[in-house]
Length: 112
Image (cartoon, rainbow, N blue to C red; front, top):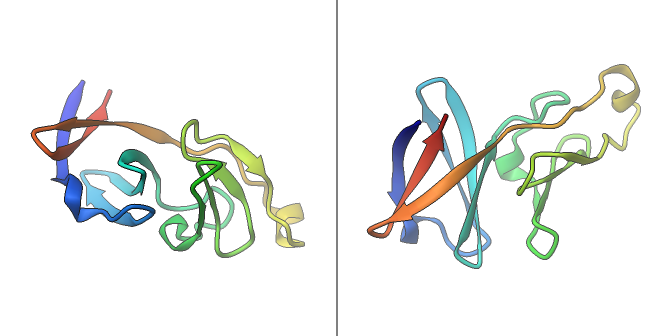
């Protein structure tokens, strides 16, 4: 298990997002009421930028800005497939989420 220091907790506003390219990871970290969620930044459908997607804080979901796939920020599960014809040709699938730890007001990504 590896801990990767990301940033200070105050660097991501409430209901905000920050992206990181660390080692071989391209992730987006979302802040919902000071609970942090890390997910692969690119949608599993056609690589849409989830950091630019529609955050639904109440449901803890992110909607891809390209074709509307919806993912759980807690589990990475695909909750709703692409809502366009593009979804018929290439299927979306679940994505990866990563555990975040807070220590001394800094966020750390926990990598197994």
